[in-house]
Length: 279
Image (tube, rainbow, N blue to C red; front, side, top):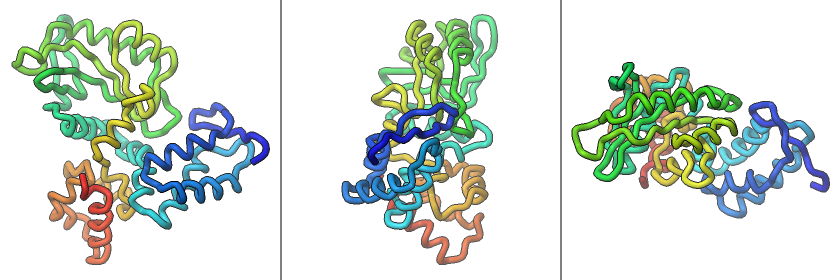
């Protein structure tokens, strides 16, 4: 490309297309340098001013899916989190499973009595050295951000819960309150959180050790990344508490509820093994 191309992001804002962002996302998904160069070359041919980021994603994804289904699945991770909806409960369960792989004991959907009011807690986590509670802000579309109001409301909850505990051990006091979202935070929410001491975790915030980094490091992927599953089939598995694709390695018998033909069943398990079998 000789001239810079403007792209339209999910929230409606515009920015110049940065090829390194595309390269980085492909690299993190596991594509090799040759595949990255080929995909970037093909995507460059179709760019035009105002192109939506979703269109760029779909093009790159279709190219990956043809040659490397497991890489395509990892590349689709962000979309897979959106597909955990429509309610936020599967996202809460996914986060609990994620932190369990990091050595935490976790609880979801509990109620704690603060000094002035009861509070429903999406996620509570603790280990021998650390404990925290978290508000899980799930959004089904990428353009929706968690804003200042969310941060201020969460800080008020932290103040009311100060001194309370999430377990009977000495290290289980509520000293940290996290807001975890599958999308992004507004700039004002980030600034406020930094000022009052709230912890924020989103798809790409903070720059290092964000939600994407946590997931990639743990190697846990929601069943919604599996390309051989339809949306309704994934929903059936989630309703039976099969949140992670690795769950299917341990509980293959649950697939009987999907009434899959033998060939489809085998293809699904092959995809599960190639994506999650080594984790």
